[in-house]
Image (tube, rainbow, N blue to C red; front, side, top):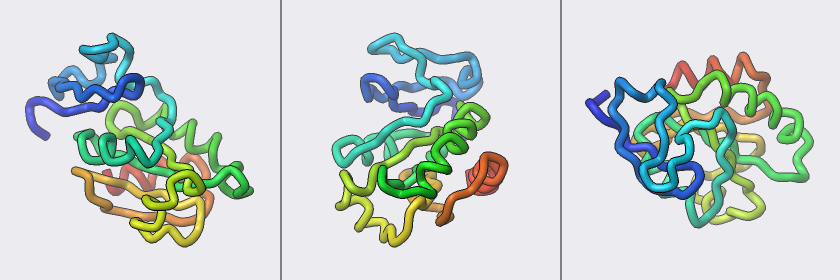
Length: 144
């Protein structure tokens, strides 16, 4: 890692430059002054997906899901728990495939839930099917 990382604020979408050594010190956004890492899953959409995935220097895991999907509903609390364990070294987000069909199509999402790990804006790993917190954490850490 370099001396500084770019982190997109989950509140106002401002790109912040944070010294790597200070990442674990609860950094705040220079624009809105809110915490950059909240331990919560970030909700993405068609409009902001690229900004977060392409401009966040820490690895990002994105859960592609839909509200009607039973396995997605079962995995959601497990995924939320993983966010509390993995931040700030990894940012966790989710994308509703019903509302963002273009992005789901671009990434060839054929079954949900599908978890994709991105580094530097590029997909590095993919896992389909509902999994529990320890498996989510293990999968993401092995590819982050």
